[in-house]
Length: 259
Image 1 (tube, rainbow, N blue to C red):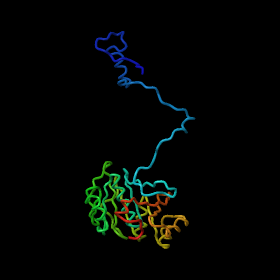
Image 2: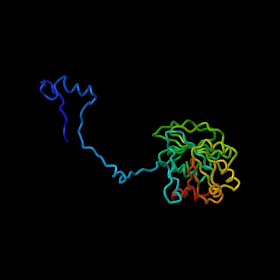
Image 3: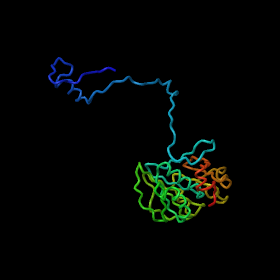
Image 4: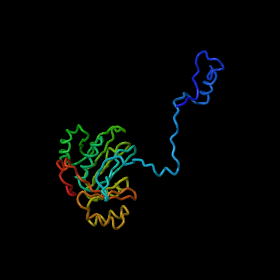
C-alpha cells in the first residue's frame, strides 16, 4: 500500500507537502475529501468475462419442482403490488401458506370456511407464528414493510367479494377459486400470476380462450394429476408438482385436487 499525500500539521512551513491553506484546501475544493488506503484495481479482460459465474437465483417460496426436477419458486414478497389467482384445491393453497410463513412472511387468511384452516392455526401456535384467520370482509390493515411482508389468501368461494385489503408494497394477495367462476376472467385480467389445477374440459376450453393458451396447454388441464399446477405469467408457462414434506403430510394429508 502506498500513500499519495500527507495531511497538514499545525505549524507546517510552506515547504512541507501540505502547508496550512495549501494542499488540504485544494483537495477539499476539488471534492477529494479524506484519503483512505489505496488498493490495486481488480480487473479482467473481455476474453475472461465468460469464465465468471455468479450464483443468481430466485427468492421466494419453493412451491414444488418443474418438469426438469428443478425447484420452482414463487416470489411473493415484493415491493410492488402482486396479485395471484389460483384455480385449484385448498390443499395446495394451504401448502403455499405454510411455506410462506416459514420464510418469515405473515399470512392472513380471509375465508368463509374457517374450520378448514383452524388445524393449521393450532399447529402453528394459535396464530402467534405468522398465520391468522379472518371472516370474509374482516381482514384488518396488516401494517406491512420490507421486514414484515404479508400474504393475504382470499378463500371466499366461487364469487369472492371485492376485498377490503388489496395488494400493495410487501403485501401480495392470492385469490383461491375452487373452479372457473363467472368472476374469474376479471380476476385473471388483474392478476400478475395465474395458477390452474385440474378442471373440466369445458372450463379448460373457456380458460384457454380467456388466457389465449395454446390448444396443447388448455387440452392438458383436464388430465393434470393431483398436486400439479400450471402457473402462467404473461407468456411464461410452467407445470409444477408440489411435493409435500413429511410434516405437511402429517398436517394436511397427501396432495389432492378436491376438498
